Length: 138
Image (cartoon, rainbow, N blue to C red):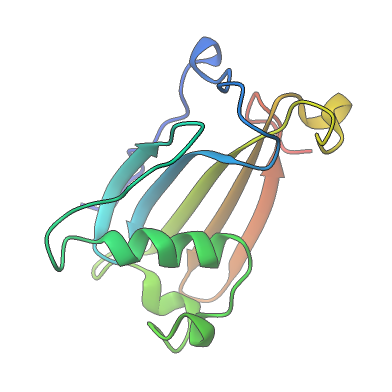
């Protein structure tokens, strides 16, 4: 099945830990490579991704590269972005929550304490949007 399972956490759950501005606090994948729906909450310090061969660890790292603008060919995993869409699905999405507080925060008056980066891919195009801590497009 190919529908959205990755719902944003409730507002009270979106308050990031006191990690440095620019650090990733959550990664959500929808229909991306082998992942139908995956949500990972990251801690404010060292994080490890473990699993058996073929379980999708590299897909998570590839998704981060794609979210931040890497071309498909540069990932050495696909010829075009549409190749990242899970077989049988019409789109893929990568959503990355980025902490945004402290002296290095980026436009905190606009985004608040969290920036949500969302990259959506379909058969014919892709789009990237930034959202504020409440999930509103800025």
